[in-house]
Length: 112
Image (tube, rainbow, N blue to C red; front, side, top):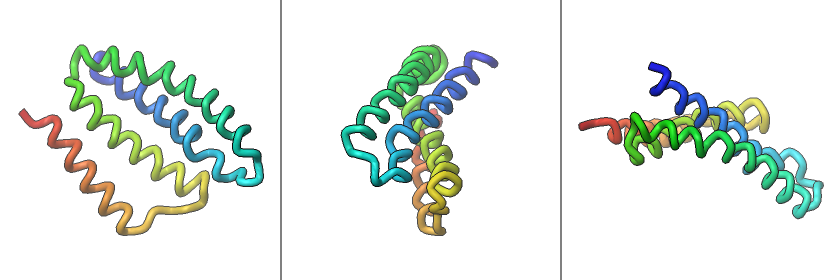
């Protein structure tokens, strides 16, 4: 069971780091661009420290397309929480509808 769960947890952690790397600077628009680029790059290092082993371990039990589909769903969930609570920009009905379609697409990756 752990072989199925550990990759998901590692990918969840990596997505949290990457979401902060990509979007966290939006709260600091007065910071110099080069500064936020370097900080984002530093945060992304920790994302890779989780993402690479997550995909490596996950490839033992999931196919590459399944890992990618899983990653997209995890990304959407992390981003929805991040957008609402960190950026104070809650999602609207059309965002949820679009995300639901992506989730359906990702679930198709798991059909035999």
